[in-house]
Amino acid sequence: MLLRLNAAQIAVTISEKTRTNTAMSVRRSLFVLLLLTLIIPVIVFYRRANPPAAVETARQFQEVTVTRDDIEVSVTAIGRIEADRTARASFVGGGRVASVPFTLGDFVLEGDVLAEVENEPQQIAYTQAELAVELAEMQKAQLLEGADEGQIRIAQANIDAARAAAASVAGFVSADEIRALELQVAQSQSALESAQRARTTAPGDQPQAAYDLLEARIGQANFNAEIARLQLEQARTGASGGQRSAANARVAQAQAEFDRLLAGTTPAEIDRADALIAQQRIGLEQAQTALDRTRLTAPFDGVIAAVNIAVGGLALPGVPAVELLDLDPLRLTVQVDEIDIRQIQAGMAARVRVDALPGVELPATLERISLIGTNDAGIVSYDVSVRLDGGDARVRVGMTAEASVVVEARQSVLVAPNAYIRLDRATERAYVNLVRADATLEEVEVTLGLQGQDRSEIVSGVQDGDTIAVDLSGDNIPLFGG
Image (tube, rainbow, N blue to C red; front, side):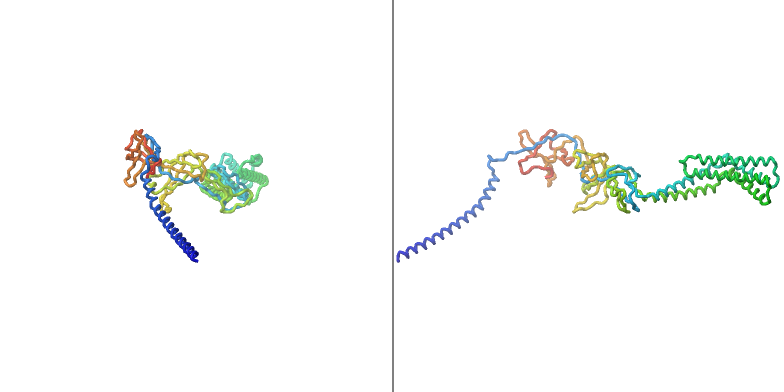
């Protein structure tokens, strides 16, 4: 019994010692971790501040020689190639499409018909109005020409015939007068036959007004022949008092016509002819307007960019049917920052580079600068229109392009790449790393002149032929503007 109690006591004592040792071990571990947390950063900082000479990183230099060259400063902006003008043509009245003579990509001239709807009634009306104007102008021309010798002789013959007829009616008709009247009948009949032959043999390609004139001459000759015949019959048979009055009236009428031909055209006749021409021309203009409503014509020389109709289909009023682009010249609209806008003005030369055509540079001219700027997230810019002066068939509307306007240039000056120049913003001073004879670097201050996008002019601080460098292995690479 005593032995069992001692054994139990011994077991309890060992267990208590084990718990005590475990607790002490945990406390020691925590202490060590805390100590390492404090010591390791100190060691790392010390080693970084004092690296062993044996492990120092080797310097790597990138060198360039300062030389004389030309330099320029330009304002650069990006935009898209645009057509000079764009036209979207649509029909006013619509209708069924009769013809579309051009296809996508075709070049057309100003006035070319791009499309046409059915318009047969309008074409007939226009042709009739055109002929009416020609006839009115021809009639005026005849008035201004006056009577020719043939017409005067005919008028004189009409007077003689009328007097002879009147004399025969009065009963004083001699054998000689009868023979004269018979000759008058023969002459008038011959004149009628000549007029009829002239109408029958007339060419078929003359305007309608010419045919109308020939028909009028036939009518006049027929009238004269009938008068001569009646006069001869009256001379042979005698006449009543009424017939004598009529004969005298014909004499007066023939004399009046003869006098009119000798006097020439009167101002009133010319005024009437002019009024008729003006009236017919108004009708022609109205017919032309009606015909034009059925056609789409090119407002300028250009290239067909879209055709939205087809022959046999319906063209709706006001809906664009054909789109036309004026590609001569092409233009570029760019946005220039308010800081740079003061450096440029209309008329300055520019260069345009197209992203899709590497190496292609097109001459251009700065054409217009917008007077009103746009504010985008606090950045104010102005639209600038640039006209391309040089053409290239590969340039397409919509291509992204960059326009550069040279604002200042200098020739044969000391220049250095901007990547080798360090600017101190606080002091507004510039520095470069000059490579000495022993291959070490010495930072020297330089004075900058014209500052370009990639290179800058160095006025003083280095000489032609000096070598400057950038330490690529260091943390302080002297970049331009840094």
